[in-house]
Length: 225
Image 1 (cartoon, rainbow, N blue to C red):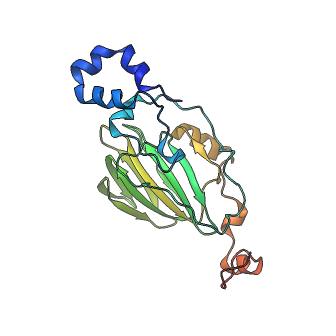
Image 2: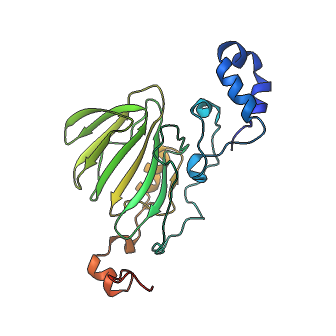
C-alpha cells in the first residue's frame, strides 16, 4: 500500500536533495520502516512531510474487520485522531457505529467536495487539516482546521476543498448514516454504493431508546450485559 522511504529516495535522489533537503533528512530517518494510514493504527502519527509519498491503497468498500452488529459495551479509543498531521487516505472510513451515533473519518482531495446533499440525521463536522468552504442552508462560510460545523437533520449542505492540500475531518452522525463497515476510496465510489443501496445504516442503529432498553441493549444500571 505504501512505498518505503528508501525506495523513493533511491529512485529520485536529486529531487529530494536539491529541492527538499529537510524532507531528505526525514526520509533517511524513516527509511527502515513502512508507513501506514494513521487510523489503521491509532498509536501511529504520520509525518505531514510524507503525505505526498503515499500510493493508492487497495480498493475496499467494506472493512471485514469491522462488526456489522451493535457495539460492545467497552471503550473505543482513537489516539491523536484530530491531530493536524493525520492522513486518512480514503474519502470516507467509518471508525465506529453506536446505537445513537456514528464516527467517520473523511479526506476530501484538492479541488474535491463532499457533495450537495441532505441527511435525515444530525451531522457534526470537525475539521482537522486544510481549508474549504461550507454551504449550509444557502449560507457560505470559510472553514479551516480546528473549525466545527453543525448541520441539523433535513438541511441541505455542501463542503468544498478550496486549499492546496487535502481537507481532512472527523464527522459524527446521530444516528448513523452509513454501513458500519464502509470504506470508500473516492466520492464516486461512495455515491455509487449509496445509489445501489449498499451503504445503508443498519436497522439496529435507528431504534429508539425505549426499544433498546426493552431489548436489553441499554441498561440504566450499566449492566451486566
